[in-house]
Image 1: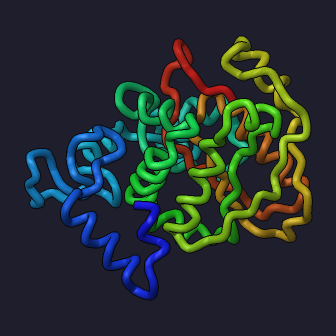
Image 2: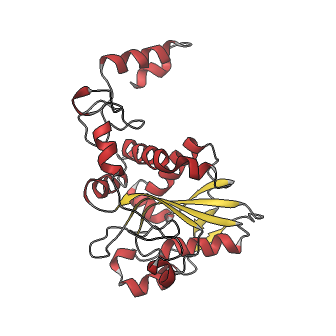
Length: 260
């Protein structure tokens, strides 16, 4: 509770621990199970960070994916999507497909009240790919930026909050060097073929990167047009390479709510 932080010394920490024991914090996804426990309170299959085990299993269930573009059922060196898309980045780390409970969680994370959901998704993403993200050789984590006007209307930026969570868990700093210098139309309002042009030149890096590798974080990847535009800006500023970390990848463009 908020009042606990005003207690002297270690009392605040003990108070918070006592409250957690009396009233275990709920899983932010299902809002039922105590965080870190499996359904029914069994602790044989612990959850991930703030997420109960049942939700952790459900949200992390996924198909095989291409390590380069993140497409479902892709294989390194033989992915048809990679041959068509020619990704501007090196690797893609995905939690799961943009459907079902994971889609619902991503949409909740976009709201101002979705801070705990964002933290849960960041924990799940790092739980799955943490070793690879730490070994990527990156110097910083960079969020895909939202234009300041849209952020003021929405009151939150899921990508920014996700980047902070991922960075804290893998021990890297967040760098907000990437800025969106013009407001673009929402990508989900446009046909697929118009999306690259919509975001072309929309991003700028405010300082030189001098060969540093970057982990670029967003909540959803759809066509990859927004991420590609960000990668071009990062490369122009001297980035030594970019890896992508996203919570969800759209395996079908039929009904995608991405609005980057």
